[in-house]
Image (cartoon, rainbow, N blue to C red; front, top):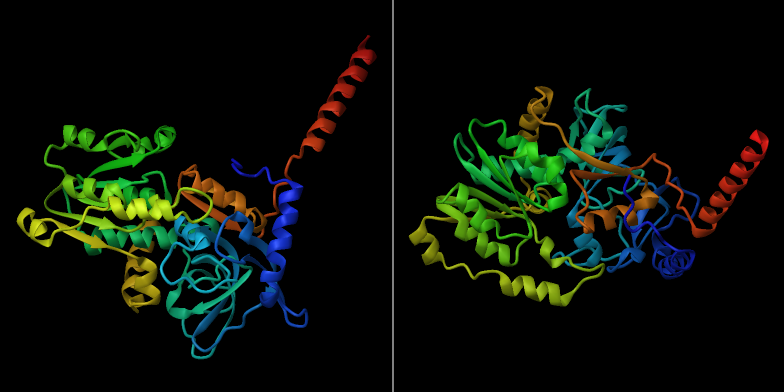
Length: 406
């Protein structure tokens, strides 16, 4: 497993404990109540704001399900939460994470349809990166028997978002064309798979060049994100595309609108261009905002183009459309059971490895979804001292081995 950013020194770890200890004091349990491990974000900023600690275990309220978590999804949005670049984030300290999978441990009053021991996946309004979560029953879904916990944690957010953008917002139909940015990511791969369920859909994927070999078969045409993909797409389709899915924002907004066919739909569902360094950058935020082409409604009217935005979490937690999301989830689970779609899992990480996992997704190194495996033990870091000792032992072994044969 790749471990970009895993070389954390003892000095840095000491600074993390020193800085975060006081900030998380009020979320840690007194020791009398049942405790659980959880990832705590002590304040907005860099990786040193994260740590795994003990906190009081939640109990289900009326209408809630208590889940013993097995796996959690990690999304680019979680990096933006950590940096504090999203609108109206809750005040830290907080437990990040919006999706998980696990086993029902107990249920609150007035719960029907779920029993203790059920294997489930769920949306959570924060608090997912923990050993136990409680969430309203409307956000909980039973897992298919063949689905693993890692797959379930990679399934809910990515596939529901991809499906709703393609079919609910853009009305994808036979013979249409779709361009998706970050084609190697979790949503990008979900989009590619869902497009394959509709006849004669052409998928243009944009991704980093080093991912092309791994994802080439999932799309029709694949282009490097660092080249002028506008001209490359127009060589294949001079009129442009019917649907464009943009998770980048910034200058790509204007480019995307220019690529739309008449009656085409541009959907913005992220703003990853705002994340450049480890901490929040006002310069990156201002640059992305400045590069966004100001939309002229009259021009949209004249060119017969549609521009839309999509936020699944706002749809669920702020706009109360959980019944619509449930109907979409039912359709997706049918496709999964028919073996037409399957989440792509990039790698599994222990809770204690959340910093390294975040660094990997920040570096855009993942193909598919990164998963926090709650039961996984962290991989020991190879320190310089241990490496030298290992080399010395190897040399001594070879010398003894040589003497024996002589």
